[in-house]
Length: 282
Image (cartoon, rainbow, N blue to C red; front, side):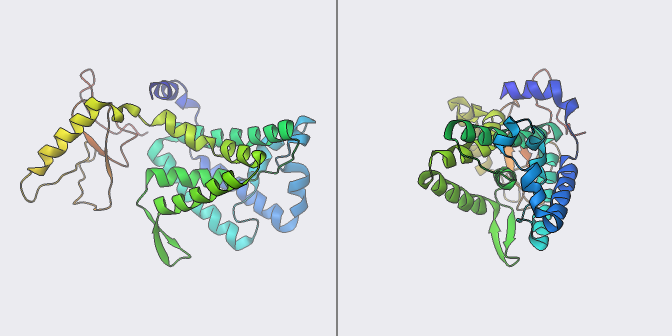
């Protein structure tokens, strides 16, 4: 949406590049503590709303060192590698600013959930990085829905199906859990819902936009044999170059321009005032 694009234009210089390097470094520190001093995290670093309100404000940051995988060496190393790859690819596609906003919005959601549950429901919850990592996976699955993972290192399954299974689990927990559980789930994953609402252009539901795309597809059907149906306006790749490559329209660009997934969020918008296309990634 226009609000977020304006925000990005003004503040993107403050974004932290390669954010996942620092996050993985924090996970490594947390793994070391879990292996050699597991009680230290819970006593001094965990996200405890009661302790935060009593003055231990550093917990709003230190809770993020908890490694994926529950602290086991093998599980944590696999989880750290997985989320590192997810985060790096999201930053590469979105840009550092958007990825920073998404990640830190999740951190704020976690802190807010712990405080709300404690203040209004008088319950102390200790949120780790589990929901934060799930939000990264949901974002990745929404961006690359057809990319395949090897479940148990053997079974190929697309990201969108894995995200759907996880979503069903959270929906079940939301329905069956108490009010505190519901608040925790919603606020911990609010970055996924809010961020995609802000960055997805709802103009694609406009009747004029729908008609323009229908006309374009109608023209594509009469293309001579051997032609291509999709072509990225930046890099020029088509579905023949990579059958798994996804293409999307940009409703902010004039004309029927398509972009591959790598350039959908980084290209210059083509308008009458700016008639050129190109990758704007630094």
